[in-house]
Length: 451
Image 1: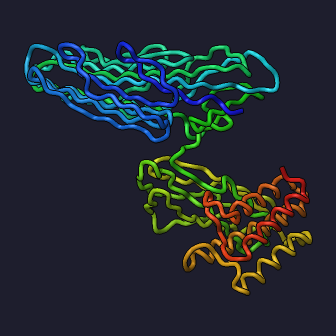
Image 2 (image 1 turned 180 degrees about the vertical axis):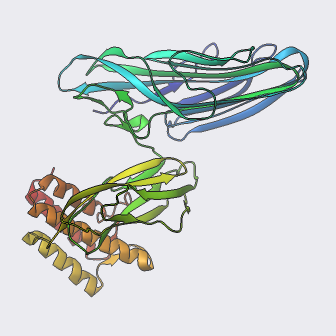
Image 3 (image 1 turned 90 degrees about the vertical axis):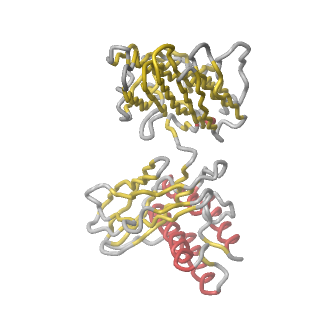
């Protein structure tokens, strides 16, 4: 079900109104009355916005900055006062209004709460005669509200929602639950206000906060049989997917591999920050211990990937014993992290593939020898991609022999997506034999009844 267009708004001043498909950020100085520092609006919720400004008056300086995109907000404010008298301060305010619908087999009323990850930090540099430094972070959602405040007596207090201490450490917390009917349009509202103010000679206080969805867990707390999709916020099956980072395939199945023999496949990382034209850094790759025969690249990191660029991550399976095993590839980048499940079966001898798989592999090999099918990329990169595609087809044949038809369909779909001419994800092969190879893969899926 396609949800309504995302609506994000700021209601800071008289006359503000809802605007479909926009993000707005707003900062103001509050010494001697509100004074606008910045106010920006974008019509693309995934492009993101950034704004920063400063203002000096009455022997004081206010600074405010914010960035917003994809349903998340970062606010940073600073106030510096150089003498006694009036207070100086600044604030950043954002408000999001996101349509969503919980879906289930039957219409029912269920208790729902929201999981968020917050990071709040503050720095009070003090100074001679520093008077009443204060920092306030206020959060309001459809499911509850709360605040975190540094009061003039230097004590931090929080209320309602358990907001984290302002020490810069990310903390996940859940809002209170409220009953919501499924299969009925709802609204998710998130409001964030960050404010600092102070007075006194050379007194400065700075505060910032970020708000995000969990990267490795559910966005909403839901009972079994109920889920939610919000494409505009990159929420799929109640999990958030970072729009800046692409990882394909989402899982890797090696099928049956002889004990003591190697097989490898490729996971492709894509930097999807094309609108912002920002680089992405692949910081680390790891596999859980015990490795169960799986391994990956460990040297040569970090690697910078330009906007729109890709990086191939080789994953190897070398089983040491007969039987099914699994593991997880952990990918950590400068913008987000992703986990890729790995699975395979150690075997004494690889089972024979079905005739269609055999015919496809024979066509694959003969085309490579004839020069009509080549790996996509230069040098060893192209060869690795070509070999990885062949391994994917072989693994699909092994799954068919084990009557694991659903997994075989998924494996064949991954292979098909690497041959279809669509750049997302990138193709592994090129040449005049690529279109007939694509047709053979489609034919196998058809005969298996894949959806």
